[in-house]
Length: 96
Figure (cartoon, rainbow, N blue to C red):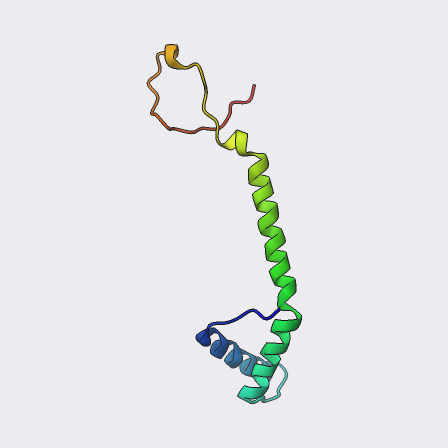
């Protein structure tokens, strides 16, 4: 898997790799070498971050789906309560 980057993202990433290698490892790398490092990490390690993002999104959607009745609830048989209620207002289900 190779995550495509926009041109400016790729340029900024290559510059960041060059800066990191120079400052932290005391090695100067060319633009081509930095691009090769970026491609390597994109292919080898980006899938871990991608899969984690997918799993986080799945868990979030499952959590929201499980609480759907608690999140979206409309009380029935309220005509005779005498309360003026705005049409279409959705509120949390009361806990009894």
